Image 1 (tube, rainbow, N blue to C red):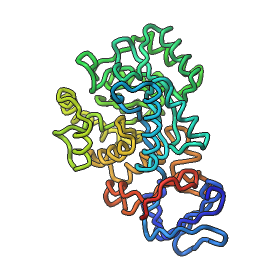
Image 2: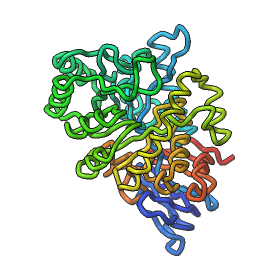
Image 3: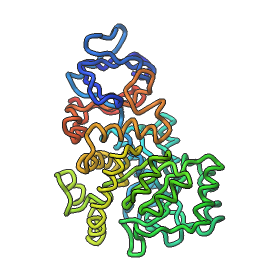
Image 4: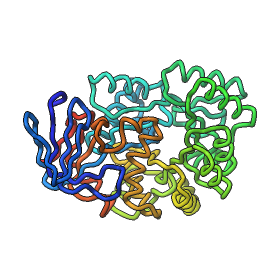
Length: 404
């Protein structure tokens, strides 16, 4: 079905561009791209086409998760090969079970994200598009060291050497962890910044010289402001910010990926069965849940302030399993004040633009690659309707069909 003309008929299109669905529409796909989107009063030519009647379902761009990691902790005793295989399986399930057609990595050991990017791009395996980071770079005694995904660096030339090794490893962008986090030991605190001035300046200078975008883990005002001023492409987390942070976002070109799940998914805050089930399965230690609870109100406040200020924002979860993560994160966006439309745009059009792929992906428009999902119910009425997944298409090929 890859090369023939495919028509998805009798479908309501949420195109990622306008907030009102195009009702009773049809979408034609040829050679992996959307060739035409037609309203109900302008039927498409279906001659020599395979026609799929979707009976009033809702068609959207495929979802993106712009902050992912391999499963953590890995299965007890798992080898590097087993962890890499598990990561690929989880990525495939994200595509076929969650409708996630693209991901951006924020840290992966042994360049396993680069390996799976190449494997999926070859067409021999089924999985989402990957924008790879390899290891994330932090200082000795930095953030999330137990993950196995961290490369510890010290001094300007320590960071320079590590960045060069990342580039040699085939990454798409450089992930710098400039500060601490919520999920970590007592000395790994999100209010603390880790890099010294000469370290951070050297790291950013080399990334700019080699034309690699910086994905900056920045969790407090000092780290956020330093990252934006030095030219970070995106700020991850932003648990604590201030008015100057927002002004820098507004005057600059940086994106914000808030990862609400990290501070919001605890037993105390769970608001529905999906969240409660996730928390029960993840078994996050009580002390880390308390740290998340203490951080959540401040995080939610700056998320909403950034949203209202028009800061460029995209959905990224920072949690696993990848088949559920973006769906949970979108629900948290709406809980914290986003409209379903804003959450959908952040997980489609905005995310594609963040990853430099907006010309090819992220919306349902003629000429774009046909990475699409079909859901039974309208997610603009209830964001959790995004879970009623019926079909997933990647580049016009049906990779998941749950229509019964």
